[in-house]
Length: 145
Image (cartoon, rainbow, N blue to C red; front, side, top):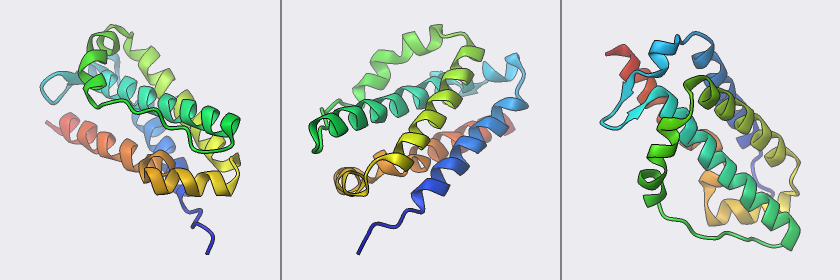
């Protein structure tokens, strides 16, 4: 049975959610804390980073004709934090939106057999909405406080 392609709409919806959120945020709100070490802008830079990683995996997988998934640890979040903080907030916004849009388009176009292989390995690489919405929920909650 072919894979359910509902991930396309889920990803588009999460990208639109990012776009709607950032369209109404002030520069001050982009600096609002989200948890102990993050801000809204850092959360957006984080999303752009991990979406960019999936783009890299897609590039390698398409090039090789089979799954190419170099492992990196979540420790990269802690290592990358100083860089994400240094990104101007409006640039983090641009990176998050542009990268999400680019990845959504790529996931829509990649051959189904490769999507299925990626999904079997890590469903969050295909259903990007899972990761995006997790952090967007945190941002929404933080902005309420």
